[in-house]
Length: 347
Image (cartoon, rainbow, N blue to C red):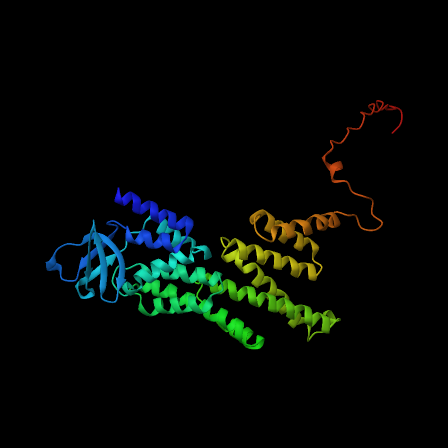
């Protein structure tokens, strides 16, 4: 019964996301967690509920009994994850910040203990705070995990989150020239396993390249005839498209960024008057990412664009696509030619 109550409480945390619910769930965890003794002679690992980690030790509950377990007696711990806790970590939504913060603060002192997964709660909290633009708070948590977590893979993920947050902070404070220079430097050395940073960098640089393309063409109206300007113009053009199409090609599951990239590719094609390619990019956006923010704009732009592309050129007869679908009427059979007469007396 206690186990069922604890699970229901933690499931409520995932849906309600209040700090009070999270605190109540921690107080009634039942025997969800596992503790291993530092001295194997003291016996096998045992299950209990770790209510919180205090400076003096772990506050542990078994049934109605509570005790404080000093850290020098603990060889390892493993927090059992309920469905609600797994949901909190996986979703990392801004509305989950109160509950995530309760779990993080209650367990953060176990960061360096073998088996502790409190770093997962901290990283989820950092991601949620990043969405809320609480960058300083998120960066402090990510750095703490990168420094102190016992698990190397989680330390690596925390370092990636720190790098992403560092660049966001740099975006808000540095000069545009400095930002662009650092962005190119990062994109050349960035780890593909950090999609957040890569998508942030490519999105920023795509806009810069498109801006440079339009500015260069405006300042050089005859760029097509200028052998010195044309290579620079073509470089900005191709970079704009490569960067815009990067999310959809390499991170198609990131639907928001991939749809935004296809939309930006369509804007490049629109600027260069490549209507057929623009239409193809918009059609890809609608087919692959129909529910995204750009889909309505893409549909509004595509309808008149397709009508324009199907319009006949001046002087050409109107073309009705429906005519091609109509079966062609067969020509009436002609009478056979008369038999050929031969004159046996002439060559």
